[in-house]
Image (cartoon, rainbow, N blue to C red; front, side):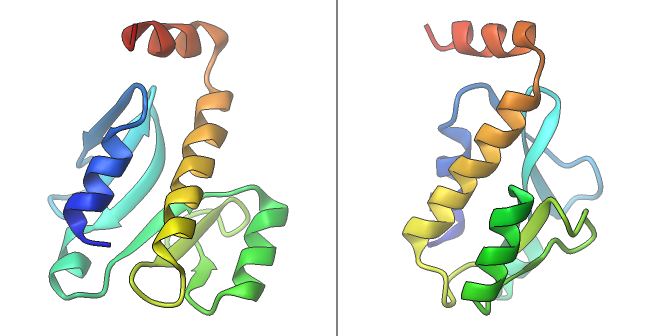
Length: 123
């Protein structure tokens, strides 16, 4: 997976916006006002890309046990976030599924009003 594919996949989700709230290198994707994916542009340039994704705590542990390149979220809650190395032992199809799962977890945590507004944006 390259940066363009990752970027376009995240932005293809309903109501997603991109931000740089921490610095000029950490790309953050949000749905509503909440983060669901973070990735360092510098790591992409070094050909060592990874992404922090929100994850169900039970699934997070299972994924870490199954894949060497899925670790507890770097600089995030280790219970609810994983750092997933891209282009390593985690297939692109699974990376996309994990992005989908992270998006859904965050979307479902939004207020019903915010969810409705996002869904109506796409009509």
